[in-house]
Length: 157
Image (cartoon, rainbow, N blue to C red):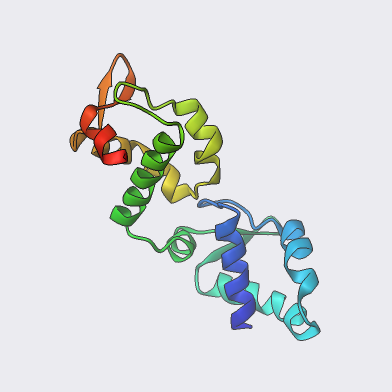
């Protein structure tokens, strides 16, 4: 049963669920549970009950919803590690765009290419990451945009 519980939590994290989101049971079944052995399939119900009992999930309206405790459990990274990940991803995005000093951080392409793959913790850290890059001189803010500085350019390459 512990393996099934861990797999349920991993599926929720991979799905990018946030507090209050429901476990998408059909996708879980067709992507994961269909490959389970019969004993693992029999353990799904007890595993869900156990996750409800320990406060990770809340059962209501015939669904299993992620709680605050569950959110902390599936996204255990500390805030500074998450901000560092986002900062490095922004820099990687700029590098892949062949950005030069003065080029803007194109937020819409960044959102479509990178942000859509973030978990809720990472999405919530984007502003803090950008502010940190401004504070350390990598980016500068002007005219409601963020632009790569000469120092930032030198750090990229």
